[in-house]
Image 1 (cartoon, one colour):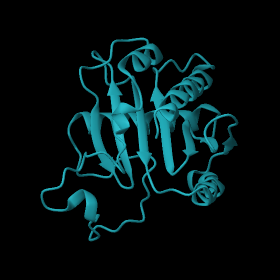
Image 2 (cartoon, rainbow, N blue to C red):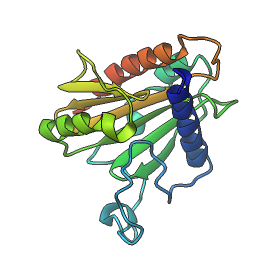
Image 3 (cartoon, rainbow, N blue to C red):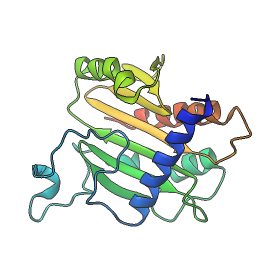
Length: 196
């Protein structure tokens, strides 16, 4: 496997997620961070209950309010779409910010509540094995944070926030992955500052 292949897989995965969300495919579990352990006949009570809104804020937090349009536009270097797309991929409430003229550039932020630091640490310990990627601890974000496969995970208080982005497909530029991760860190700082 060449050094570009893991990053290419991430780009394809996140691109598919953004396109699915943009097309309104809220019924499928397309989140790159969602577990595949849920069976087809299990029904999440909160998101599928009659009369419930599957895109309602998770644990009182609306993931689309963790970033401002200006922050997203600065990160993407383009004007953002009029409204971000909200969806739920258990256990995360997801917000996808697309650009106006291309769904191939986007920022995705996910949040879930009720996560203890011990649970977050256990997740970090197993993330590398699950994704077959190296996990890197990140200092200075929330109570604890780590990066794996282009995703930045952070824990603060009772919340877990996940950040990823797609800035473009310039594979001839070796610093694109590093730039995207740096953008993730800046956006994560903003998102964590808006948690209760």
